[in-house]
Amino acid sequence: MDKKTFLKTLSAGLIRYGIEDYADIIKDYENHFLIELAKGKTEEEISRELGNIKQIIKDYAQNYEKPKQKSVIILGLTLQDIFLIPLMILLYGVFVALMAGALVSTAIGVYLNLALKNLSFIPQLIIPLNFLYGLAFFALACFLFGFSMLYLIYINKVVRASIMWQKSLLSEKYGGNNVISSLNNDKYKKIALYSGIVFLSLFAAAYVVSAIVAGSFEFWHVWKWFGK
Image (tube, rainbow, N blue to C red; front, side, top):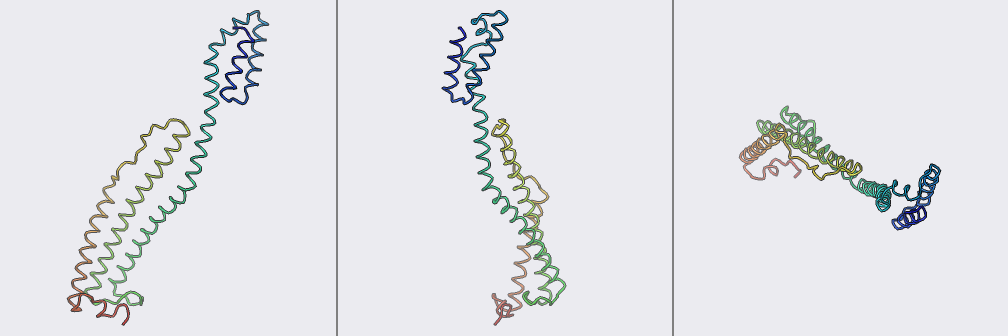
């Protein structure tokens, strides 16, 4: 293939694939032909050394598509993050709320067990009901702590998997096997399970004792906890 045919075929192929800088590429090949011709080579020899022209066009087309594809991926991930970031903030906000609930439950447990009377919005309890309800709130605090830690482990895995997936897409090495493993922290599972059982048991016992002492299943009305 002579120089004219080679360059014409190459130019047509690059234009067909929409390669914008095809003119610069053709110019580079023209310069290459001039350099090699000055060395005494024929146009046909130079064409053969350059290789299969169809493969050359294909290589340029693939290299041109990669930046475009990556730009599309980056745009897609950016739009995804616009929705994901507020969602992640909300998820971590739930964790903070659960931990706050654990702290409040602990404080109420201390308040009831010490039989304090400083807070008017917390009903006054007779002994030993204050101890039963106080211990129930301690158990509730442990349950909320254990559950919140399991929840934190889970959302951390979700966030980590999302980050790894995005990195894999950008590096073009994503294999689709970044799955979220099951929760395996037995310590927090046991805390949540056992404290939940203890809380329900203590709360049920406190309710029964309260109903017996007050002589009514709606003992809070008898003791006027919430007004007349």
